[in-house]
Length: 287
Length: 265
Image 1: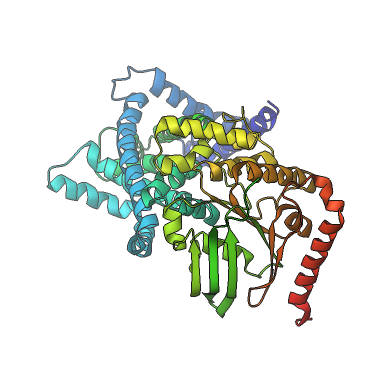
Image 2: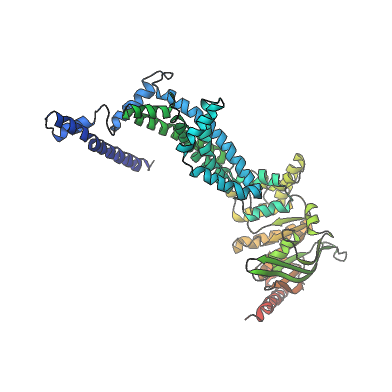
């Protein structure tokens, strides 16, 4: 546990910077207020005021922590004010989109590795798809799907999938191609079929790449689900919390939702990391 | 001991040409190669890099396609011989799958060739015994030394009981002490199984120690400059390397290698 010290030091530095930023950015409001009332304030009064404003420009860390705590533990999980409820709404779309994106990504990678036409044609399209800003395409997906009667979970999941298939394609193409010429020659001397080459060699060899891709894809899927909640004026989900927070100037609400999203992403990546460790260990592959 | 009077041709090359088309133009890897290998022989291919020794071995294994001449393996084309499981191939690196145990790696060709399960298990056990790796079946490759890994890859090549064993510098990456031991074991294995072995090497002592026939090759274009039938007995203790005959054969190999180079310098 030698690494605990440095980690805590970095964390403390971030929190200290954050507090300094809060004082600096929120002090303008304090000064404006007191100037309007023809009062003068000391520095310590300014600091005290910036720590506890109702609508701070940058909420202090303890305000966000308080908001997060209230949102997670201060409500019934079914309440519309519960962050757990909103996180679940977003997470369900994320997981569905992640599953679709991963499946699609793996299938495309298999096609790219085995079919020359796909090798030449799919990758440029995949790259082009990611250069389009998701904020531009998300409302169209929602509107188009709504017009054919599909609303709710699926449109958000589609946006998640749109973002998450890409790292899977790139990683799995690399993974399926990771066996070297010698290993392919060896299977050649056994007259192995392409299917055998895939299942015996390419697929197991791609596993380390698979899990690395999944971690990136999971984070991207979460972003996709949140973005999918923004243009519809959704009433539930972390995206909806962000949106209503910005409507009403509730910065603490925005930051709490942001941290909740970060926590969800960390849990997702952590779970994938655990599955990775167990799988690779059972496969006898040292990390 | 085998009865050598009754010979049977296993590999036969006549006027074999092989030209690679590269970005810099055609490269003649093999030119007019004639060679006959009889059943049960241990043939070494020796020469500097670029002499085509590996290319020739790969052509026998149908991993390269000759551009001229004829090449037959067990009286068939190399491709047909491959489908008939005529040979096992051992590469310079063991190429063991890190996600399979040693037994799992040896089982790989058997799975691909569709052997029944009970037969697979029986053969795996048998060949692991043959290369002195009994009891290591459940280990993963990284738990074994480099020499043991290479023995496992030899076991894998032997698992489906091909008559011919093609080895491309199998001990090239190992240190000399391990190499000596593996050479000794390889000779024992050869004596026990009666396989025909084609063996590519850089090392003169290795070639002389192991072979009944030494094929000396030279580069640009790759061709055979000398074929030496070894006068050494089949039974070879390590100290045979200090004998007169051994030193004479080694000398002739060295001369052959030098002759192949002479006109370039």
